[in-house]
Image (cartoon, rainbow, N blue to C red; front, side, top):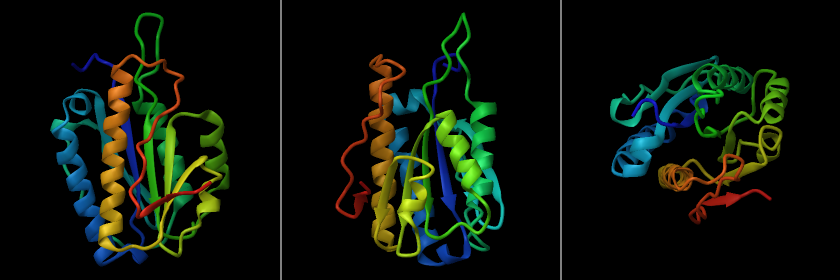
Length: 214
């Protein structure tokens, strides 16, 4: 199975101080639900590999790209500032290092899915990292501006696919993770149905708590 084409999935989660309390607890529950949901889906189980990158005053990859059955839930704590630039730079490194490229004898991994969620303004310089990621097209990035402090227009610099959650209530955050799970399942189905590599991703319609930013 390890030789099959993988669908790499990266979760980039804002764990800055403003997420402390109920929001970070809802994110923990969301990640937990996401893993158990995907483990119950044969296609996702076979193709999806998951990584978690968190960012606060710095960015770190808590979970390298791991198959779902072996995935250990990371410890998420909220504190510090919002180093979005550091997170995007780290994501670029991980995509370069972990995602298998196609060779003459073997097809590489499917195009990675990246879900970025942030609830605030970046506190470091992020523009160059955002432009590089957009230019390189290393993955399909879906960015979520969570709550009133987040700026969806700013996230448009990272990716065209931006959604908004109007508040950080636990049910809104859980709805987001449920939608992420559905998106991963839909994508793993469409890639295993031998869709061309260049085919755009088809995301399922988001629940009412989530608005797509035009």
